Structures are given as C-alpha cells and as structure tokens.
Image (cartoon, rainbow, N blue to C red; front, side, top):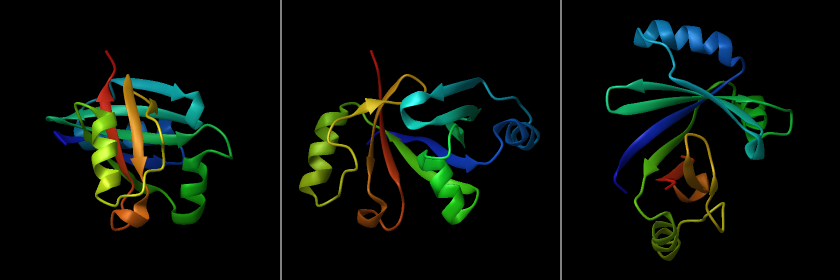
Length: 133
C-alpha cells in the first residue's frame, strides 16, 4: 500500500455537507460524481496531500443508505492507494483478510476499487484504490 488515498464520510445531504466542509477546509469541493453501480453520489475535497470523499445515498438500497440507517452519518471507510490492485488483493487474501469483491470494480475518481470486510480489519471498512490508465 502506497498511502492513504482518501477517507470516506457518509452523509445524508451532500449539498449541505459540501457547505459544512467548505467552511471547515476554507475551500470548495473539486468534484461531484455519481457512481451508479454503487448507488452513491460523491464529492471530493483536497486537503493537503489527502482527500476527503463525501458519500450520499442515491437510492434507499445503496450501501450508504444502509450504513446511515444503522450508524448515522460519519466515517464510512479508509481508502489506500495501491499500484497493483489485483496483486494486493491476492496478498491480503493470503494474509487472511476477507475480500468483499472477487474482482476490482470501477469506482469514483477514475479508480479501480475493492473492499475488505470490516470483520477482518478491526471493524474498519478498507478500500483499495488503483488509478485507471
């Protein structure tokens, strides 16, 4: 793993949250994107070398809607940049981590992504991210 790529925060209202985080960081988000396959609308803020991703459910069945219903708004996941997502997935599976994805999928911000089950990483949902070429 190369670095923390971003921290994902589940929010009920992305427009309201964009204003809150704009005030917090003293700068606006640089991107809004909808990921239809995940049923989520995302917004990204650049904070120094790191990013914060806000996630709003696009429908009631999305993982973000279910997360907010169970736990409320808050930190949803930590994403790590990797240079070769498939080899990292293989390595982590051999180390005993439970993968939520058998294959990487297309995520937000032009990334290939895969997730680790929180039960295998001390309750933290871990996302692996690789730039798409």
